[in-house]
Length: 290
Image (cartoon, rainbow, N blue to C red; front, side, top):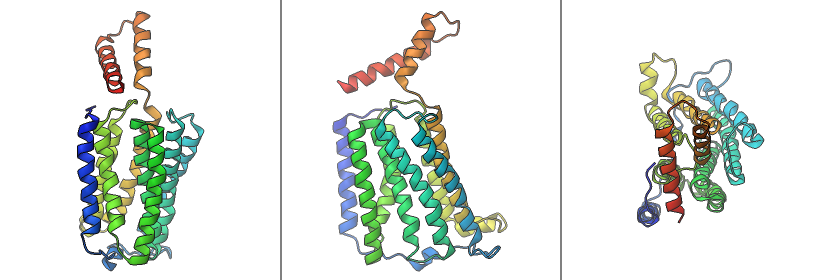
């Protein structure tokens, strides 16, 4: 994984932060359009308004509850620090909140209910970003990000509710999903399976495309399922992919120890290339630390 020196990284993040401030303070108020609540699939099945948009939130509930339990248990997920436990528990709790909040919103979409859909997503983004920060930079800064971002998410939602201005929520929801793959690329992980962060980002972008083409996808599949419902199903894949990552990943340094141990025992398989790569990675991490 590529690594960028801290000085160069600061030169990247500071302009990005200033650019966000310019958008917030030098752009006009952006009220939430009523068209936001008009979805192409409004079928009422079995007495449930907007049935498909409601029931496609069910996968969030399943994966959220399972992930929450497994993150607390610690026997299945490979989580090496208490700070990561906090971040991942809040993430899966946010996913459960998305299931209830989005279903509640889609039963009767309006400006009042949409906040219950928005807030859990922002909590999930915040905790996911914080989990990555704990992994790459340490518990102290990661936990600070967790509490600060959740507090900021609540303030953004309260501001939108009182002033009908979505700028803060919009910047919040644009910045964190983009920052996650950037940090995952710029800073090496102590774990294997880091590519799952990029897979999750790709799924997120695909889901946003499906949501933006709600009507076109609905017509394309002969009115079976709308783009917005597909967006729900696609987004539910993200916690599934990240759960797989947590199950199968391991410490890179523990992997190095295992390789050396197997090599010393005279195992016939050829470990030389993999062992060399692992030792090179360990040397790189030591240089970064020093």
